[in-house]
Image (cartoon, rainbow, N blue to C red; front, side, top):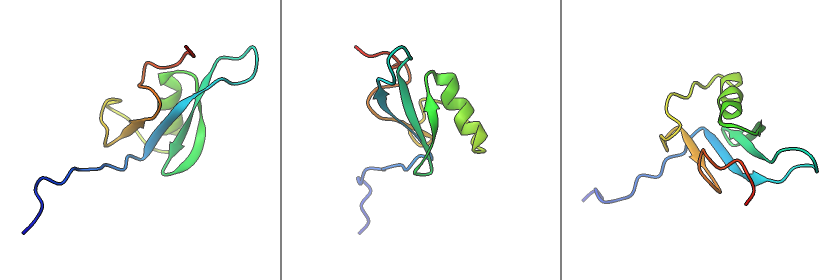
Length: 81
């Protein structure tokens, strides 16, 4: 018997980690990992797209969990609270 109710756990190639405060006077940033390796820092959604593109990944849907995983906040989390 196969488990049809088993949850699907995706392993996206792009992971955007939680917000880091950065150096004094600079905007906070988020680390972008591609295939499990740190590939860059992003201060905006556009930066995430650019880091992915530099690694040969085109992102068509930032809300697709099979493509991008947002850790510690979604695609609109770019400021410390």
